[in-house]
Length: 170
Image 1: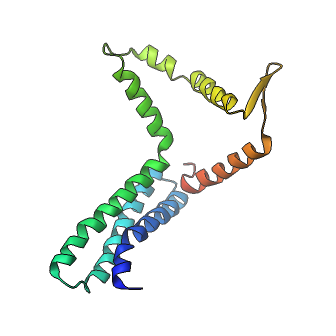
Image 2: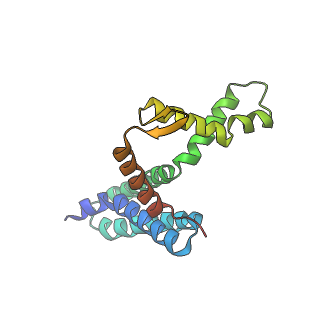
Image 3: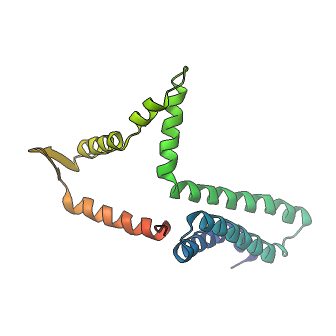
């Protein structure tokens, strides 16, 4: 493979190293925050090393200088998207809270926020979405699965992915 392609693929190598280190540290040390930081720094180092080892064959100094910001910004963009992906559940609640506060010019009392974001309210919304999606149904005072095998397979697949990416802390 040519050095130009290896330089082009450096951000991809970096994000793979980022994810691998994050998984390794999260599973061995059980510290998710530290794992994300170590993964990011390790991925950045891998990106820089791969770029440096292949940039020396650039035809001009101007070409070599132009490559660095593109490679680093590409890695930063990929890392940010990876981080957002593993934090979607937290981010969605934060965005919803900010959106609700935006629509209330007078502000919102804490009692209203805690009532609006209670465990019961969140469960009711999830049950409503599942019922709307025809995945569950309410009959005889009980919730029941409608599409059991597909939903169970999805649940188990997501559970395995969650355990791999974000293992439970001690």
